Each structure stands twice: as structure tokens, then as C-alpha cells.
Amino acid sequence: MCVTWTVRDNSGQLLAVVGGSRFEVGRKLLGNRYDAFRLQVSSSYREIFDRELRNVLKREDWQIVPLVRQRRTRGGKQREFYLSL
Image (tube, rainbow, N blue to C red):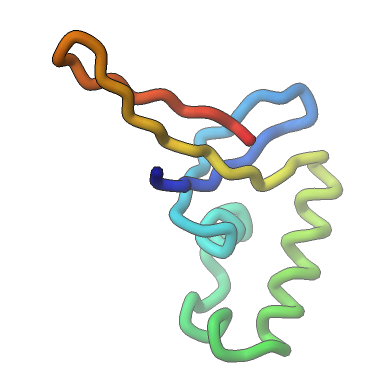
């Protein structure tokens, strides 16, 4: 099972923003202004990032949610299903 993250709006629709982590999706929402390495190593930098991301999510009434990718096979054909948790 592979987890991908995306954004869900207040009506339950998934936006076309995806990433391999919550940080990656957050950086895309904030215009990639934040350095990925510094987010991993600096708690004060991460606090600023989290505060700005929280404000954007609250203002737009969005949530960052995981998509679980499951592969199922039936009759020799492989199918992919995406489920929002």
C-alpha cells in the first residue's frame, strides 16, 4: 500500500494537488517558498511553515488528507483504486 497526500475542500472534493508527504503538499499550497531540507532539520522554520499553512487551510476551509492506493487484480487485469481516508 502506497500513501499519497492531497487536499480536500469543504464540499468533499479532492483538489489537484498531490504529494508524497504532508510537507510536500503544504509546500505546493504555499508556492514552494519553504526549503524542504530546512523543514526537516529546523523546528523554528517548521513552526513558521506550520503557522502559515494552518492559516491557508483555515481560510480556504481545506484539509490535507491521505489517499491510499490499493491494487487489486481480477481476471488477470490490474486495477487501481484511490480511497480518501
